[in-house]
Length: 88
Figure 1 (cartoon, one colour):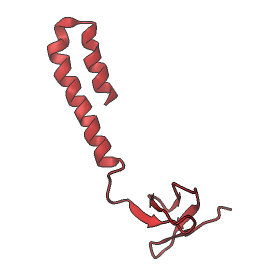
Figure 2 (figure 1 turned 180 degrees about the horizontal axis):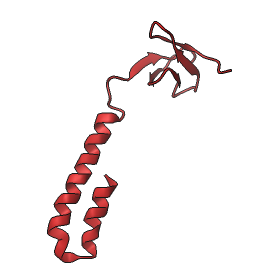
Figure 3 (figure 1 turned 90 degrees about the vertical axis):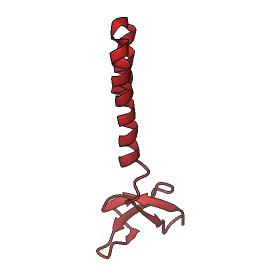
């Protein structure tokens, strides 16, 4: 996304390239936005569970993760659920 902004900003230094740099930079910005939405916080495949410590909903991505609210370490069990984990 930032690359698209830099491409468009390059038109400030060479006015004859503005008609070419503006569409190319805009496509870069739109591609960046689409990537953020595809792989970012709107990803529905991330598990959402209720934290056993604070009771709030949190999203967990790996085998070992932590609650985003109270930072309680959590570990995925073989059944696919999460339980509190004390790192050793």
